[in-house]
Amino acid sequence: MVIKTLYIVRHGQTDLNKQGIVQGRGMNTDLNDEGRRQADLFFKAYNNVAFDKIYISTLKRTQQSIQGFIDKGIPYEKLEGLDELAWGVHEGQASTPETKAAFLQLMRDWTAGRLDVKFENGESPNEVKARQEKALDHIMSQPDEKTVLICMHGRAMRLLLCLLTNQPLTKMESFPHQNLVLYKVTYDGDKFDIVDFNNSIHLK
Image (cartoon, rainbow, N blue to C red):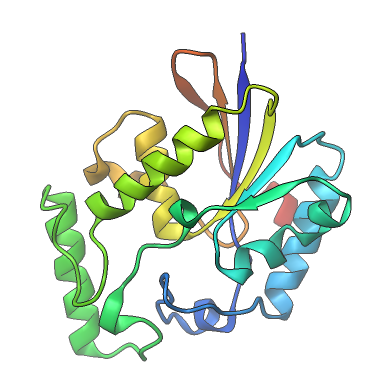
């Protein structure tokens, strides 16, 4: 028996995504033309799903990505627990060999289990997990919301999927994603199951 179904998507493309520049929690960027096209394609594909509630991060790129559903009158709520991981001093900065090396080392630290490591002024995976747990408690404590749409961010989504599937955060890289890709997750009162993994058919 499925008690709750979560449709979890990453926001659509922004110019910084296109340029390969990390955004993070501190960059409140808009979708670009491609991102708006992706949002439109997702809306057309899932417009018939009877969502009871929408949850988004506090960053406008998530709301812009699912605005079509909000325009239908579906209630929505912003949760800072769904915000992207903060990359600190590297947010919005052009990629250089030095920054690439720094990111590579950070990923090595994280996958090796050093989950408190972070960039200056940034957040660690463990810090993101703590705020995600609060957000998840809130989302799951609403018994009348059976079918829920969640729009969030790439790195944060990877961490949330670890949390949902009861895997260590070191496994975050096992959840691939692109802009406006879908993970559909069901909850039966005991455990979460990913029933649709990294689905991008709607974008084709």
